[in-house]
Image 1 (tube, rainbow, N blue to C red):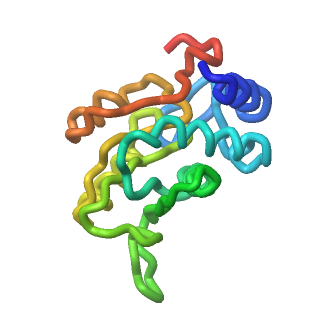
Image 2: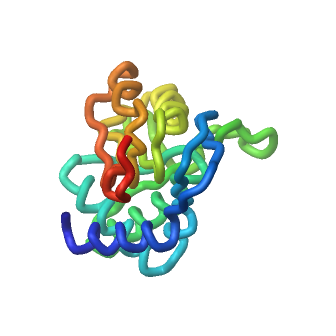
Length: 183
C-alpha cells in the first residue's frame, strides 16, 4: 500500500466508516456503512484520492474518467485535477441516473466522445449496480470501458457482475477487509 493509500484509508476509517444498522442503495441491509462523501469532499482526502486514482490509471492510455452521479463526481474532479498537476490532459464525465428533462437532455455530462477509452470510478461498490448503469450509458455512446475502479469494494458480488457484463479489469483501492470486516 502506497503512503497516499495508507493515509486515505485512515481518513476513510475516521470520517466515513460507521457500525450500526443500515439500508444500502443495493436494497440490502448491513451492520456497517461507509459514507464516502464524508471523506471525498475533505481537502486532504480529495488530494489523496486524485493521486491514488491517477496512479491507478496513468498507464492505461485512457481519454476520460467518470461514473454515475453522485458518487463519481468528487472522484472524477479529484482525478482530472491531479492529471492536470502532472501535466496531462484528462476529460471527466458523469452519468446522470436519469436524463435531464430540459436543456440538452443529456444522460452523460462532460465532453465524452464516441470511441473514447474510459475508466469508470465509484466510491463504495456492493454489487456494482451504479457502475453498471454508467457502463451501459458510455457504451451506448460508443466508448470502451477499460477499467472499473472503486475506492472500496464491499465484496458482495460486484466483480462477478462486472465479468458478466464483459468487464475483466475491476480494481478496488480497498476492500471491506481493510476496515476489519469479514465479508
